[in-house]
Length: 279
Image (cartoon, rainbow, N blue to C red; front, top):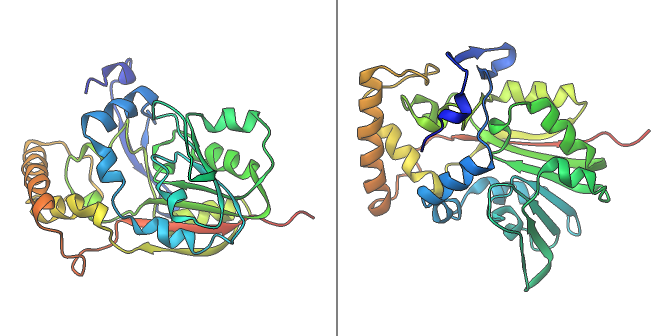
């Protein structure tokens, strides 16, 4: 994929470590809707994204029956399909069209931005979620603030992000770990600080057990002969060769041999936090 237009006028991108375990690139250059539409199609990610991911089932345990749920950056609506007793609206700009499920009148996906959804002035939701989205946005604080503006007092904010450090960040020169894909990297402490900054009460903050959807990541980590730690933007010759060989091997092995999940380590974090009640 040619992403040169996104980096026009940029000579250097740096990786910083801030307080409370947050890592971030500067400048923060996000992929646009066109980037993600091409990415999903070229890598045929729909089947991979539809595989079992435990962050959805774990999060669904916190959703009370009858809740109205908004899922931001919903992908193909996998979270909504785990919710059998809640109404679900998913919004995402990275897909070609909106659609609904005739078997579930309370399930819909819209090709819409968060800002445009806010402009519609919907009735506040009981739950607002974002799975694997926060790390892609250039202004995480504004993004969370916008989500909370759609959440009723006492409602639940649910956020899942890649874990730092983890097997994902130890794979050298891994393109998903750099702009325009991943822009920020979150630890438990960074998420706790985020919740505190918005006066949210944390009800759950923990690792997500390894999922079948992460097979290829765990194989790539296992096959990497260079490990980077938090220096995952390392781009020397050895790092690139290690990434390429590990990625090719992982692509083959993940199709024929499921990774041993007992030996896999978590690569995602799940935050469930409650908005303060109205005074």
